[in-house]
Amino acid sequence: MGAARGIGTFVVWDYVVFAAMLLISAVIGIYYAFAGGGQKTSKDFLMGGRSMTAVPVALSLTASFMSAVTVLGTPSEVYRFGAIFTMFAFTYFFVVVISAEVFLPVFYKLGITSTYEYLELRFNKVVRLCGTILFIVQTILYTGIVIYAPALALNQVTGFDLWGAVVATGVVCTFYCTMGGLKAVIWTDVFQVGIMVAGFASVLIQASIVQGGMSTILNDCYNGGRLNFWNFDPNPLQRHTFWTIIIGGTFTWTSIYGVNQSQVQRYISCKSRFQAKMSLYVNLVGLWAILVCSVFSGLALYSRYHDCDPWTANKVSAPDQLMPYLVLDILQDYPGLPGLFVACAYSGTLSTVSSSINALAAVTVEDLIKPRFRSLSEKSLSWISQGTSVLYGALCIGMAALASLMGALLQAALSIFGMVGGPLLGLFSLGILVPVANSIGALVGLMAGFAISLWVGIGAQLYPPLPERTLPLSLETYGCNITHNATELLTTTEMPFSTSAFQVHNPVRTPLMDNWYSLSYLYFSTLGTLVTIFVGTIISLITGGRKQNIDSRFLLTKEDFLSNFKNFKKKHVLNYKSHPVEDGGTDNPAFNHIELNVTDQSNKIKGTRL
Image (tube, rainbow, N blue to C red):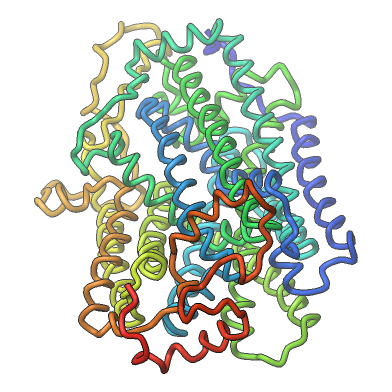
């Protein structure tokens, strides 16, 4: 129905809306640079002085996790593969519970700035260094993709200037991270969540008006087979089924939520442990809201183009561009609203990038600079933190330039997270859940997990799985030039397009490719985690892991779980007495610390404590 008119373009008002969003973000940064005496210590800069409350932190966690990849990627995912993506609602629930009940208590009671400090406390310096370097590489790669992907998609549809957008995003981000530290990052995220919801809302409302109500949209999707919620095929090679999303998705996202520095750093900045847990549970509601919005946008996308797919008809060159295309199609009569949507996609980017930059600064200062130069004063550490923020901002813009040379990167982005995040999650799980694990086991396990997940991940990029594994649903173009009638639905095998940029065109499919490389991308992380835990535990047992005596503060204990129920009786203040330490029956903090430093030599004292 709207195919006759061309789609709109960007007008002045759209640029005004977009610029306003960048401006407000920058202003928040300036405000926190000077509010409350500014960022005096590196602790203020990197941890918000440990004074945040639950709700802003929750919104901030939601924002940084919902990048432009979500705003542009999820709707086109639903458009092509159907609404089974909604099953992620269950995944998010499990992820939040695991993060709040397994990882948070240990990190919070140790009061650390960088999650990798934990690795040194529990294992040794080498393990900490490995973890840190993996994290830095992964985050810089990912951040470059996050800056570049939306810029490209929006540029090709709206003519929005590509490098102008990339540089503006990078500079504004670096600016408010450097000026305002973690507090600025959290409050700009709160503002950006508002923008994202507004952007989604404008699209959904207008789409339902244009299409004639939600019922029409759902009807179209039902007829096109897009409402495929239940697919209980247990085969791990199918891209999205109930099981791959619940099991694989849980591992993939736990590696982001439970142990990724940019998330942990935020919930550790809360006032009390109760606030920290609350922030995770409140954030769950935010995740669900954004998920529902993006799935509905995908359904609206299908309803609008169910008889004339812009992708097959070569109106857009990649599926990520479908969402901006829809926006310009239905919102062209409302100047400013397309700009709001672009601001929505970009605020997703900004919040992800800013949290990455702050986390990278924290990790660099805590893990690479402090251990080497112990004599630095707090003032100079604060300056160094700001300097590293600028440096990483520049690096990320550089990565975006590199990303422009690499092609289709969205799947690559998620695969990077799966490939690196999985083994790291395994490493932390070993530390927290397996008392017998020692540093040799941890290192060997990490290497094994990393090797296997790299092997699968790179294999899958080179030899992408066949269409019957990914099950793309049919896209019709009969409505564009009304000459031939509808072909029968669900013609999945004759897909004229491929999904990966760098694949090897090779007609001979070996069993290795069809079974091993076709593993659902969600299982990369699961594989890495399980291999790391398994190998790590076995090697630790062989190398005498049972003889070591570990302070129980480094493990997850019964008290950590039971103390949830004390919160309702009394206010919970963070000190050592509130976590009884069983060894030696002492709860004198001084003894704990002495014991902490001696444990390395005192392997012989108590034998096993399992």
